[in-house]
Length: 245
Image 1 (cartoon, rainbow, N blue to C red):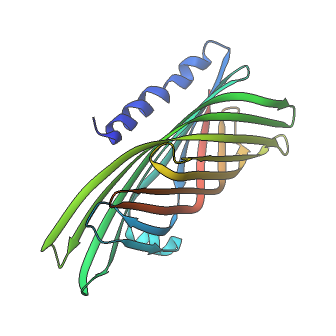
Image 2: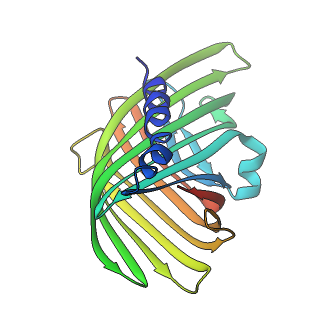
Image 3: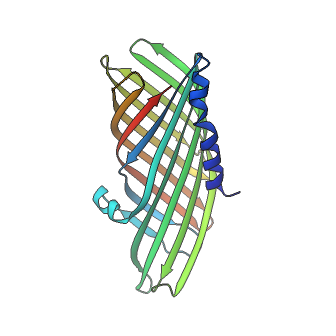
C-alpha cells in the first residue's frame, strides 16, 4: 500500500474517534482544520537522475505555483494521557533550467502524517504542558519534464522518522489563549537526517465548542539517500477553526 493511502486511512480512523471518546465523559477531544499560506525554501532532488529544484519563494510566489495544500490536526486527552496527530499535504510546481541550458519543469507533492502520544507534565489553571513522542511519516512524489516533455522522469520516496515534542497552552484571558508546539526528530534513525516543526497560535473562544486561531507554522525535513535529496522548509501564516468535543 502506498504511504499516502496509509496516511488517509490512519487519519480517517483516528480523527473521527474524538467525539465518540468524549461522549464517555472521561475523554476530551478536538479537531482543527487550517488554511496554511506556506512559503518554500530549499533544494529538492526527488529521485536519482532528476534535476535539483532550488526553491526560495515568498508567500506571494508560492501562491502562483501552489497546486493544493491543507493541514488537519486532532488532539485527545484523558486525565494526563494525551494523543495527537496532524496530516499535511502540499503540491507545488517550479520551472527552471538544467544543464546544458534546457528548460525544465518539476512538480513535488509532499505528504506527512505525525502521530504522537504522551503525558501532561504540567497541569496548572493558567498553563498546560504536554510531553510527547511518536513518529512522522513522509511521502515525496516528484515528476520532472525536460525540454517540453522530451524527457520525463518520475519517482517517489516514503520514509518515517521518530520524533519528540512539546506542547504548551497558556490562558491569557477568559476567551483568549496561546498555543505553542515544537517537535524534532530524525536523529539519523529513520529516513531523515533531521525533521522539525514549530506551530504558534493565538486562539479566541467563540462558543463553548468553537475556537478560531491565527498564527504561524514551519515544517522542515532534511532527507538524503542514494540519489534523492530533500532539504525543504515550508513556513508561513495559518488560520484555523477548532471544534471541541
